[in-house]
Length: 437
Image (cartoon, rainbow, N blue to C red):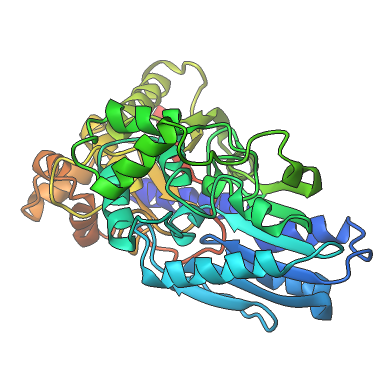
């Protein structure tokens, strides 16, 4: 039991190191101090995302009174101490009226900027939901319903954002167009696999590589054509027919004055996790920072690798820390409460049932996993039996997507609170040597 507790402590320590490496305060300060912004007459700040408040705090520390004004839409509870930039809380992952109000103010600030001014955009994961400015005649309620359908069907973030961009007046490069002819500098904290500029927060200041055809193909792929609100369907159909203006593409004049810089990513977080694991005595084995797919399938794959290490010492001899990053998806089939990281841990618990010396850990670097207060969860070979002793059926609760209520009474939720960053997820499989069991 002591060794299992030690694995838990080590997993938390490795995860904290990953989160610290993605601290946007440090990376934003470093980026701004490396630039000469003295030529700009006025500097406006705008942004959205779970980490954008922390990014605004760092911008104020560097630029101070040079900031003319600013507005940031952030998720409820994800605040930071600022003085010159207005922080505005709104709902995530489903947008709300507060988000629309804030997005409208951000659009006004962008339009206010003139030649000789700079619009400094601070964008992080969660920005798509926190910049809801629906194209007319789409209402907020219809945008909410469209978002819910996309989140529930198992679509990837790229697919979801392709639709979002083509239903928005501000995403898909349209914010950069609003600010033109002012210059735009976007500092981005990436929560998207591969760090594509036009997908992070739906790319408000990046050339859009997707089209109305891309968005419609997503709707058809998941059988949503008859389910999405009529106004959303009409906008996409009009776009397909060429009756609506496309999002700005590469070569649009506005991008000649726009610069997008990634200041934090999942890769940096995973590298830090590997360093911490080595410091704690583990052989770090980084699988990938680009893992996506159905959460349960990814959990089974990780558990299989951990079992192989434990039984044969391939591809590395224990003690080993298997590390992966990226962002998986959950296809909702039940009415339970949870998130992709908790579901990973629950699926892994079943795959590791009865096995000693292996711990599965998965958590979101932003501190929030789905619509829950947990960042994720951890599990080992005794988790299923411990749950059964409390009257909890692991298989039934996995089928119901009820991982939160599975782990809560076990005390195995990972609770961090808002971390101030957001670079997707970090997953760990800790395997200790057989001789120590």
